[in-house]
Length: 204
Image 1 (cartoon, rainbow, N blue to C red):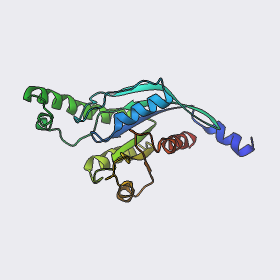
Image 2: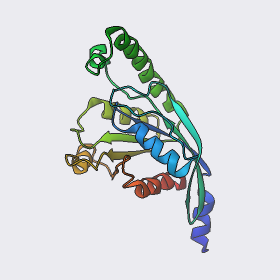
Image 3: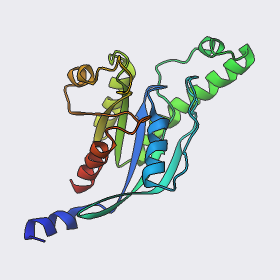
């Protein structure tokens, strides 16, 4: 190993707490589950559902290990509730929930948004998951990134759902004027590139 390589290896952080943030149903929990299965204990971290705000608490998985030629990085993955500017209980009724169930879920989802924002204070880095199959001009995406940047938290923009024919990761890149990582958390494509970005943060 050369001198520069030894310096590079020594500068690496050995552990990192990284949050997975974004709008509801962007694929945050699917991504958390993918990382947990590939790098952690092989178990799912959370439940995935087509109903928005399925995740209403912050869930953490420790000891997800990423390895490269310089050694290993011990990750703590934090799956956070979807962040929204408002939560309408009637949206849940469209998915078959009763009015009472919908109101309860809306209250829990609203508290979940607060918990997601509060989680930023204990993160070393973040992955902002953007649904590449939808127009990315959602105020939520800008709000999440703005909060991270205000706290000087390094972030990775993951354009998810590239397995869908309507996905347009290039539009995500043009919208945020930054490098993005196209992934399919469901299929597992793009994960090596994502892990590489996480390692780059640890090495910075």
